[in-house]
Structure formats: structure tokens, C-alpha cells
Image (cartoon, rainbow, N blue to C red; front, side, top):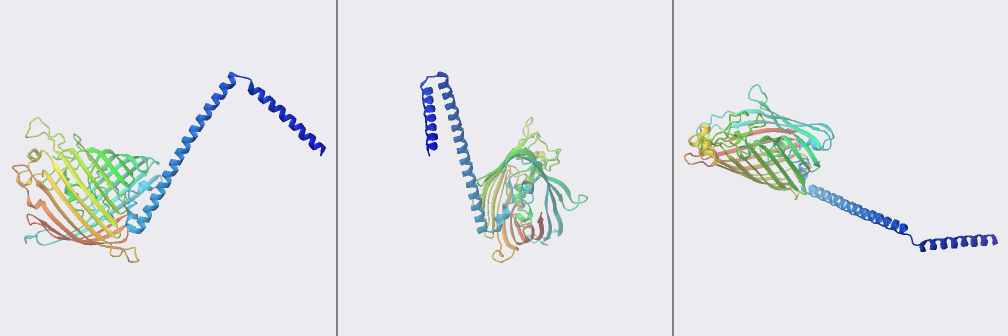
Length: 468
């Protein structure tokens, strides 16, 4: 025990000596030492500030991730409540259909997809006024589409749609590029696009795969006023965030006169569809801008607006004002809404187009009387469908549907010209669609066509469509 006591006392003496030395050192003033302490304090304060910033950033990131996960779980719960329609719709990206969107979810390298449609049309032997229709029934392989995409890395990708129409390019068919563009993705939700692009107007100009819409034929509104499938060369941006989707593109303008290097047909009394240049040696004296905004924050419900503005004269001379170019300002505006849940498939769309310098355009094109291009074009449609097998334990969908549309491509014409009553038409479509699996659809419907000239011809249609 004595040895232990001595050891403890010796250690205590050593500790007292060290303490005395430290106190003496602290009592000696030293400018250099004070400066060192100040420098060290500043360094530590800077480190504390940096660590606080990192902590706040980490907390914000963690909170954002938690919010994202809550939103994803909530959306999934709503989808399960509302039905499988939403789950399929979620596969679409940036306005494209499920098959056209494959490249966005694919790993690096090649992605392939496509769709096709075959249509049988059986026309009534009489027009609505009782005169012979002379329309002949036909069976047509409308389209066979191949989507080819390539993902270079997480930021750059290529996507394209190659379309073969009417089965054979050697007879009535053709082969075309519907779109071919490069994307640079700033993030998973936004990017910039350049190339041959689809203009973001209406429902079907971008999303036209046959399994995604009801009817054997596309609505006339989205053909004559929104001239589907409308694609031009240009550049633009796109983004998706918090239920809001936006897209905007600067593109070469329409060719209202026609006959230029693109061989566009030009505007007519039936609408502006003939002014599309389709990326083929497009005359680019005039440009246009198309933009779109959609909100889909409520599961199953979406609504939005889109529009286009640009001149379409493409450098032609104005015959009514020698020395001036023909402007033909073209303004298209449309609004749309859709609800797809609980077995329902509901859509509504209204569109209009206003065209300037129509009298001069008619003169250039040699149009007289009721052949005039419309100064104002109007149209709208609604459709409703319901899956009657929704409550049955089957993956087969049976969707009776009805669609009504009203279109007038000569709502207004210039002084000195008249409107053709045949261009003021109404169409009722009544039919049903069967989806044995989500990627295949069989549709059958009957169209009751009427116009102010009483020359409408009713028809029965049957179509088969698929995507992959």
C-alpha cells in the first residue's frame, strides 16, 4: 500500500508542476500568440458556417425527397382507387404515347417500338338528300409505324417515327418520317429538343397511337383545323413539374400558297392541312411558334391550352399590293379537357383558326366563289366512353362510346366570296372498342354525317390497332 501511496503523491506533484508552467505561460503576453488564436478562431467560425450550410442543404434535400415520396405514394393510392387507366397513362412522357415514349425509360442504347392501324369503311349508298353517294367501300392498311430511338447517355437521346401509309409506296402508299429529333435533358423533367418535331396542339397531333383514343377515325376538328399529323423542323423546350406540363417550339411556317420546294398543297376551303411542309425541303421565309400548357395535378383529370402563330405567305408577292410580300398570318388556338378514371373516358376540345390576307391568297391560288379559304375556321367535339366490364374480374375492356363534332372551315370568308355549305358539317359517331389486352384494340362505329349542303354520307367503320 505504501508503494501505491508514493506513486500517487509523485503523480500529483508532476501534475501541480505542469499546471504552474501552463499558468505562467498564459500570463506572459505574446502578440504572435494572440494573432495565432485570432486566425484559428476565424478558421473555426468559417468551418462552423460551412457545416451549418451543408446541414441546411441536407435537411432541405431530405425534406424534398420525403415530399416526393409522399406525392408518389399518394398518386399510386389514387391510381389504385381510380383504376388501371391511369397506370397506363403514366407510361407516356412529354406528350407522346406509351410506345413513342419508350426511349425515355430505356437503358442506354437502342429502343424499338411501333403501332399500326387497319381500317374497313362501308359507305351508305345514298347521301342525306337521297341522291346516290357513289362512294365505294374500302379496306386499307392505314399505317404501320416503327419508332426507333437511341439513348446516348443520361442527357442525350434520339427519337424517331417512321410511317408507312396505305401498305405500298408503289401504289397509293407512302413512306414518311413523322418525327426525328434530338433531346438534351437538363433533368428527368425538362430538356431542349431540335429536329423534325410534332407541334403540341390538341390531343392527337402528338398522342395518336390507336389504343389511346376512341373512334375508328380521328376527329375532323383535329384534321382540318389542327392539321394532324403536323410536324415541322425546329427547336424548342419541354418540361414537366408538379402536375404542369409545358412545351414550346419555333418551327418553319406553313405554306399557304403551295407549290414551293416542299410541294405543300396550300390552304383550301376544306382547311389548312395542305399547308404542312413536313420537313421536306420546307420553304423557310416565314416561321411560326407553337406552345402548350397542361395541368394534370388531379389524378384522372387534365386540361390545357395550346396555340400557334406565324405567317404562311413564305415570300410570295401580294397581288393586291404590288411590291409587298403576302403575309397570311395564321393563328390557331384550342382548349381541351379530359377525364380518364373509374372506367370513364371523357374528352372535350374546341379549336379555331384565323387567317389574314385571304382575298389576296385566293387570288394567288386562283380560288373563286365558294372555293375561298376561310378567314375563320371553327370546330369542337366531345366524346364519352365507359368500360362496362370494369367491375368484372377480367383484363378485357369493352367500351361503348359516342362522339359529337361540329366543324366549319368557312365560318367567315372575304367580301366577294361565298362559303360552301358542305364545309359546315356535323358528325355523330356511335360505337364500341374492345381491348383484349392494353396494347391491342378493335373498334367498330357508325358515323352519321350531315352538312348544310345535305351531301353527307353515313358510314360503318371497323378498325384494328396495336402498339408495341
